[in-house]
Length: 131
Image (cartoon, rainbow, N blue to C red; front, side, top):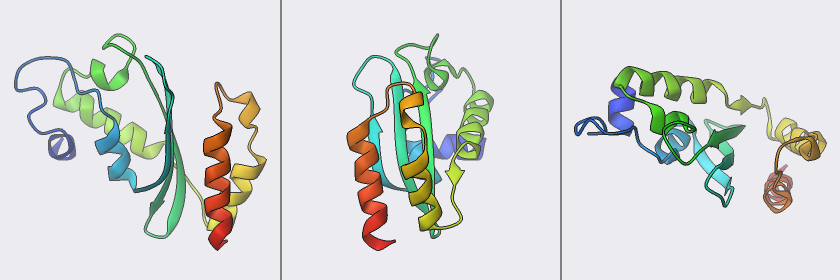
């Protein structure tokens, strides 16, 4: 629970809902290279990360209220820590930049819900620059 308290200090001091900003968790996972947030009241955040020389892909679904958003729905430090652990574990890490590039090029993005082609192209271009 120490990590939860470090990333979201004072969150449950007033007894309200959990936080609504996933940025502290995302930045805990690594340095953000490219990020795309859907522009709606609910959707997904997709992130290309770099951590200790490894590239990773993270996708987080979110909603507009505590009933449909896991982060806002947290009611205790324990629940918040469990969510942080789950999100951290869900990062898809690649063994090399080339592996990340191959995955971004070959993944069935059209089969995903609401893919953002512009963001995908930026990730591919950035990975190709130094691949």
